[in-house]
Length: 306
Image (cartoon, rainbow, N blue to C red; front, side, top):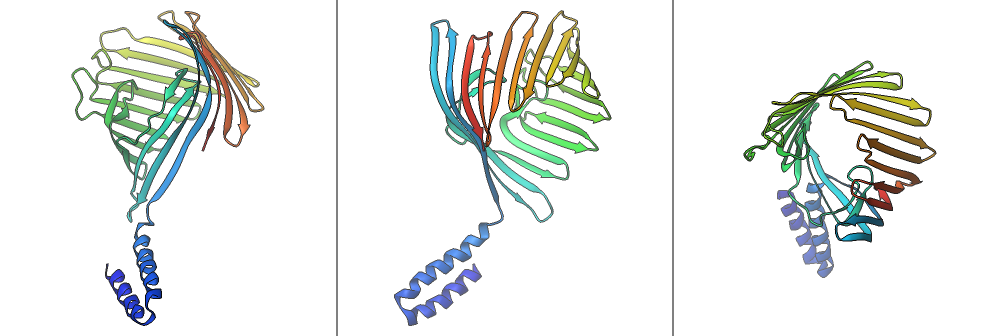
């Protein structure tokens, strides 16, 4: 403020001599001095946009519609003198986008900024604060308010807390993971799953120069553990994965990738299937087509990331 006042004083003296011409200099000089105080924050944007057509069979009949949309992520961050980075981030958008490789649905994009998530990070430790928006480590259909993540020597530890958990909802969940040589491991758990019971799951996998074996054990309080054995085998441009558990459930998938084209197909013991194909158009753009019999949904479109 002292710098601004001194600058204005000097310019005002010149103004008495130069008249109206110097009034413009006064405003320009003041604006320049005030603006320089906001240069420390780094603001970034990223996101994706796309359009397409989808069809779906519902109880009321067949539906076919076109869609288009955009999802924009915005963040602002500063780094303090002692090396702590503080970041605030949120996303907003408009219209709808096709989810062609996970939920197999056309999803509406919110059009306004909600409560932003704030992350404080330093030296492999980060603390995130975001009201009811941080995934439960065991079951991402549940959410918490505070997330703490730490990394050390190739290992990671994460904790999610809900400061005001409703009755039967998770107040704390955790995850631990790491790798050594060809062996990787993971452990995740929660103090209250959807049915108000504690649960945990651990997984160990071994990579044998391409082919990998995995063992997974899912444990819920009061129930028998569900153990799953899986194998993934690369066959040139193709990869095959098969897994089965001791509840007589199994899953199988095959994928092919070459020259920008990727095709994936999966099925299970109930003959439910889903498939999608993508082709890279370059410049961050992708054309896709996908279908699943679970909801009799088919979609085709194009999207690009930025």
